[in-house]
Each structure stands twice: as C-alpha cells, then as structure tokens.
Image 1 (cartoon, helix red, strand yellow):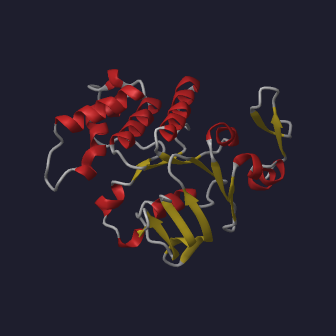
Image 2 (cartoon, rainbow, N blue to C red):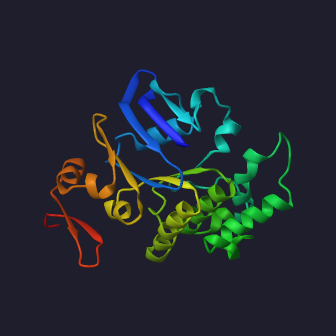
Length: 258
C-alpha cells in the first residue's frame, strides 16, 4: 500500500499560496530527498504533510485515508517529525526528550511506562547517544541534540519519518552516522522524507527526489534521472557540475571560482 499520496496539492497560508499542483507518492521502505532553495516552501510542505497546517487545495492521503479527516494522534502514529536546529526551552534529560516520542501511543493523562523507556533507550543506542541519557538536553551540543530528535522520532514507531535538514548541524562523523542510519531505517521498512541542501546526499541515499522550484514547479523521480547539472544550476542560480567518479559516486560542485 502507498503510505502517502499528494494530489493537486496547494500549500501555503490563508491569502498566500506558496506552491500548487503538487503530485507525488511515498512508498514503504524508501528514502525521499526534498531539494529546493531557501524560501521555496519545503518547511511549509512538511507542515502540510504533518497536518500542522491545512492544504489550500487538493489533498493528502495517509494510508489511504484523507489526512484532513484524521485526528492528531492518528497522524502521529504514522508520521514523525525531526525539526531543524530546534532549541530546548526546558531542562529535560535527553532520555525524557526521546521518550516524548511515545506520546502518540499513550492514553490521555497516561505516563510512559517501562516499555516506552526501553524503546527510547533502544533508539538512543542505535544512534550512539545512549551515554547522554541523563544529560540536560539544553546543555548538550547542537549536533548531539539533533541526534536526540532523530532518536525521538525512532521511538515514535511511526511508518514515515519527516526530517528537516537532519545533517545540517552535525560534524562529518555524525553526518555519516545519520545518513547510514537513514538507509538502515529504510531497509528495516521505514520511509524517510528529508529536506537537504546537499544533492550528494540524495545521490548517496535516496530512492527518489522531489525538487521544488520557485513558483511551485515540482519534479520527482530517481536522483540519477532528475538531478541534472541543468536542473541544479537553475535551482540554485549558479553553474553546477555533476560528475560520477570511478567508484560510482556522484560529486556535485559549483562551476565558479569562490
């Protein structure tokens, strides 16, 4: 079954349509990369897929049901969200932050139990941050906090995880760890939708890309077919070169002197 389908979707806010006529599907056990310049509407699209803001036109189906007809807790059992660079306003421990991902599975006023804490700890172990469990989440590095948010999404046990630039604040080692974890999650049956400004991430990790251009034009398909030098040059406003190395990896670089 298709997990998520957008049909003739228009996104935006009352009085302002950011993009329209968007059509795409998210299949099980897949990685989808969303690319586009700043301000094009990537975060707005994510909020629309999460049911945080209503579609301006068209529709989104989640597990064959209209998203607009689903309750917040029903949506949260299917789709989780990893924000970009979000600060922590209160002094939660990292473990408590991660176990918040279990909220959608608890009844009203219910407290997380042993099973919920075990799932949260397992998610932290998968990301190599189990040793942070008792640390104050407001006093760890931005990269460590980003990994904690990924762990929180894993603990949510959703079928789809939406990630807004999950590697943006990470060092090289943690970036590689998160990208490998994304591929591992897809192999285990999860579907990942992640925004990125790094086309190489899409070549390395994605089954499909969704490219959102200014004015709302959308292109989707396999990265090797979609991410041409011509499209990327138009997307980012500078000449781009796309090369494939002898090992088969793709390298994307500006064709300008900086």
